[in-house]
Image (cartoon, rainbow, N blue to C red; front, side, top):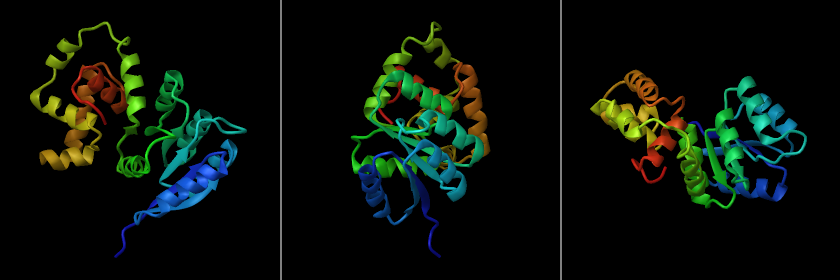
Amino acid sequence: MAETKIKLLIADDHSILRHGVRRILEAEPDMTVVGEAATGAEAVKRAKQLKPDIVILDISMPEQDGIACLRQMLKSARVHVLILSVHLEYQIISDAVSAGARGYLAKDSLDTELIAAVRTVAMGGTVFSTNVVRLLASNEQRRSSRSNTQLLQGLTAREREILLLLAEGNTPTQVARSLFVSPKTVHTHRQHILEKLDLNTTTELIRFALREGLIRNV
């Protein structure tokens, strides 16, 4: 029996880019593009109608900007959103992540990076371009006045192990398989880790690990 393909919606106001991204993705045996959108309003409408697994979304969209689109999509549809944009300003990236984006890639990312990012997001992971990661990490250095060394010392050995695996981009299911435990156990440990490190999301956990030098990239 054939495996279910990852259903994708491409939302960008430049037709040449949409068609180029479509060719790249549809060349993969596990992906199919179910639709395209040229405006923000159209992207939200088509996400509701077509029910894609992932929307590849630009930030600069006519009628409605990408951040507003992202928020609306997540309220009205079960979908993951991967941002593909030329905008590399910290505030824009931070707003996108806070709104619920599962990844943020620069438009000059390699084809292989986009394909890998789609698969990672489809599995429930998060992914960022290297330059985006550096920007987030450098700005997060201003975030906390508490001793991060003390925070890390408060983690158990198993919590530190799970922290590293999650920060490297593994999904809870992948972590569970790697450690021979149930996904529920991983989710419980993840919640304890976030509480002990004074964090709220896995994205913040990734930033923390980068800032502390626990991982080099994602």
